[in-house]
Length: 345
Image 1 (cartoon, rainbow, N blue to C red):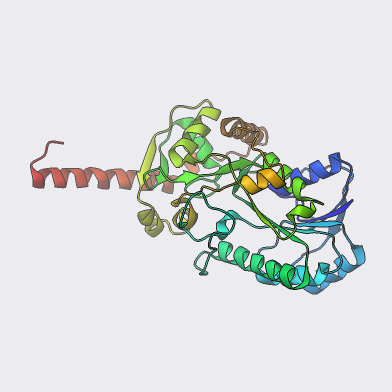
Image 2 (image 1 turned 90 degrees about the vertical axis):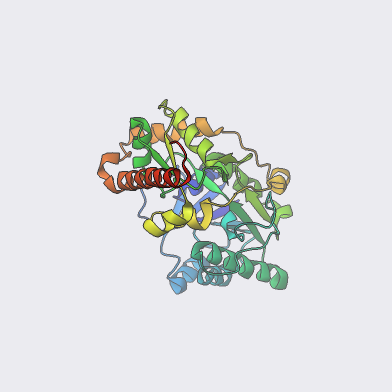
């Protein structure tokens, strides 16, 4: 079987590539050729930029047809429309890597199922654009029988990457944990979060390849059993053999005002429960979460340590400035209210 992976060097892509090569498939990667990711030997590569649509479509015409295309870097409606021009009538199956972020937040009910309402407004561009791509492919399936399968991963982590934190993906958070520094957590730390190691997510994609039952369907590939954000951070500390973390809970809307860029994702996404029904993926793709959270984190930290990729938290003084300011404001509020109401501190 000849499988084309558009991307192929990202976190999930490398897991997919490795599994396909190990089982003996012919694998071609299409990317810009700028990553030094660990790609297994035996793969073929086409160098190009898929956003240069005319060139990309000519390259695909010259290289194909393909039994299966796994598109890991389709982020905009124009990308989806180009993919249809490139592959319609020339591919046995097209697997689109979408995201669980396509859903309206907060969801109307939990766990979220695949036919839940998708992002209706562009206030969260990443999610809105992924949802728009899905609609383009679904229309092509309905109208022209374009053989699309949609897979929606949740937060995926693994060796070669980092972990997400309230303030994004900075590795200095690991150094904070090692040093016992306070960690900012949005809200009260009780919103639920789903996460899954890239190896388990990659095997779900493999379960979709050449699986005719998946065509025209969409699947969640999210962590089995959500955890609170407090538990998330506590698990990281456990994996690092670090002290129990000191968690500083700050209202999410306040974080959004004082650090709008750093807190963008926690305002738009992390503050809401992320709990998904994986039943369809378990049945049709054979999806299972085999790598426990603490074990998976330990693998990531070992990888980061091996490459010296954990930043020094002392180089990010603005983080501590936020913690200090919040603690001063909290103490001031306690004193003022205690004085007004005759309460003892």
